[in-house]
Length: 154
Ligand code: NI
Image (cartoon, rainbow, N blue to C red):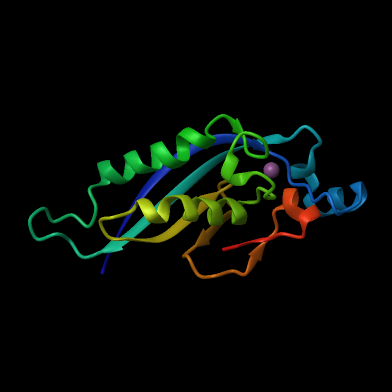
């Protein structure tokens, strides 16, 4: 198996906030990321596709194709946006790097035809990043659905 990775960057605002917490608990839990009007990060995303090189091209996936998929389905949706408000797929999700990786996986996985999506890394800063490889993680809270006692499974 060969692993092919494409990296991209986006800048976005977010606010980490759980409406079932008190203001004090939100601040204690999410600190700077709980800033009432949001704040920004310069994110890096790394998408890795695993596969066997096509004998005719030597490619697992044409990186131009992977780059175009990431631009169309991820970067164009989130770059210079507010993740809490502007991205339908993230609506009601606490936009931690963990949850961003989960949601991006849902978006991108069906689009990867050559090879198979292997991992998504989301860097929120140089030192902090998460990696998701598609394993089930149970329920991720969507707080806009709490009132209906609904959760969305990943
Ligand atoms: Ni933050």
